[in-house]
Length: 475
Image (cartoon, rainbow, N blue to C red; front, top):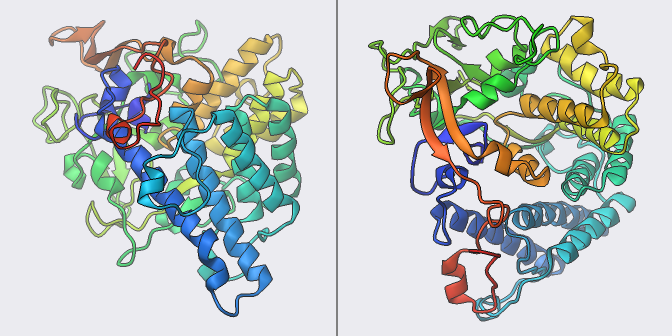
């Protein structure tokens, strides 16, 4: 999903998010079709459980409520994903036949949102879900606070900031969560079960594996670099003194762009001369200069298996994978840092952000990242409400980069026409190469039509089956 944003570029032209980022997607886009299909496949499985659970003999009421609550949270997550992309969609809460499915009409998004929030409130108010699971075998199951964090995320997308503040404050005050001490450890197997992870997709070697490493690692580490970071993400990371790289007193140097930067930059992105740490502790150096002979060098085009930006993602690198397509690393869905950021954003948006709020959220997140200079840690003085909001938005971008949340953020903030129009650039390669902008390699030119692109099109393949589905405006 990051490839559909100003964080990344996806090389593959079929079945991926490249077309969404550059505005060339259509009603027949394969990736959009897959999202629609996968979400409704998940909803169908949820509905099959809710319809048939009473047929299970000997099931206690407490266990029945536990299973139903878990699956209702999963179903709410599916519908949240659908309405944020397609708006009005069929809302189905029972297992229906193919014939019924082919005639169902869409439900207004506001009705769906209110319904899933009501379901989550019922689960939370009745405390059907445990606050934690005592057995190791149950790690990864949905808890009370994971459901509450999903509720906060839905409210955030709706701009209901006062409710976001109340919801996240309850998690902060009463939930047994804390930031993991070291940022880069969050995304490796040895530390994947820590007190910051509220909900994560579970994987295990030789049982249930993922091929994420194959998609983003350089060829020298057996990857194909299908998704790579771009310059706008790199530029978003602030300096150690808390200033943006564009500010006059920041100390930023284009000739040494990695010096004195937010430590999360180096934990997230690998650049020319950067390193990956292998399982034995040795360093694996990457060379991306386009004129080098390295297999990892920058190369333009959609058919090459190397970086098309001069950067590689480092976050989620599993140095214990059996092969690049066999990793047991979990992927977080919600972590506590996101809750802190939602709380800070809700305070800023409602004009109630205090130094205490800042210290409880942004300061803690930056301290964990490795910032030590007071100007970077303390709440800036003399800032307008809009400036504070933008500071927190940028903090959210850097903290959660490559975790699949950027698309929802730029869509709900209504800034996509600003960040997805123009040239997508890569590393600085100088003026001696073609296809550059001020010395930065030009990957592609993007277009975002605000009259239509804030919603995805309803897949035409679905409308061919179900004549009751309405197409979104201007598609």
